[in-house]
Image (cartoon, rainbow, N blue to C red):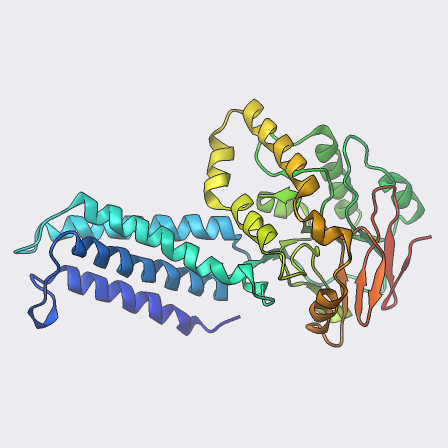
Amino acid sequence: MARKSIWILPLAIAITIVWLSHQPRLPMGLSLPSPWDKLGHFMAFGVLAAALETALRRTRHDFPVYRRHLFVFLVVAIFGATDEWHQRFVPGRACDFFDWVADALGGAVGLVMTSLPFLWSRNLEVFGWWRGVRERPEPSRLLILVADPHWGEELTGLREATNANPGADWLFLGDVFDVWVGIPGMETAAQRAFLWWVQERLAAGRWVGLWMGNREFFLDRLSPKFSLLGEGTGGALPQEGLTWEHGDLVNPRDRFYRIWNLVARSGPLWLLARLLPARIASGLAVWLERTMRTTNRSYKLAFPTAAFRIAAARHEGATFLAGHFHTHEIEENGVALPWAHGGTFMAWRQGRVENLE
């Protein structure tokens, strides 16, 4: 986690903007005639938004990207509106609505620019988030691993594995359902049944973690229902030497998918889903599921061995897990878990990944 001193930069930028906007003329007698003054507003607030976003992502691990972007945009827009209103009291300055529009647009573009490294970087932990406890109460307990069950109406294999292993903890590595959107009113009966099962496990003193995949969207509001909930890269039980991610971000060459990932989990799409009537929003969820069947397909047909080895090597000294590829592969310290669609679960037992008998 970065030091709190990283907040000095956005604070300094905000103070500079306020000071400049309250001067009758720019330093050294410079002036920017319209529309160049709008460009100045655009650039200044773009830099401010980028600095705020960078500070938040370096100091908050529990802030999903879409909420972080919405928060930063709102702060920048309000700051711009307040600053523009105050200028009406500065001799020689006027309150201009289009200056505020430039402020807001600059903030939006600044946020977009901070997201660009997501398209090619291997170091993506700052783009992820997690909430909860990264430590099991009893690490010696069996940990059942479930990757990509893609459940529809039936939770295939879940009750049977629970009855056979009542004392086990659980870790789900994403794509739990065909599609799961965490918008109120969009949960299915099967998803409600799964959440009820999770509460049963927690009430029994068990640890249950969920790491979101490419078929889960906006589930952060459900974080109180799990021991650990997260998204992106950087999943871990540090004391046990176990790390993981879903696997959809392993291959940095799949830039088309990474663009889709950013758009599908963006603030504007969340706002759209929140504002749409329930029936239309549910239709959107069905469309997302159909889109997910073919998106990233060329990179899932062939297991990306080289990229997987590089991803696993970033976790030297730990066992690295991923799902997503629907195949059981072992590369150095990395293990790709098999497809759990038919109830094929794995287990973490005494520092080893094994089949769940």
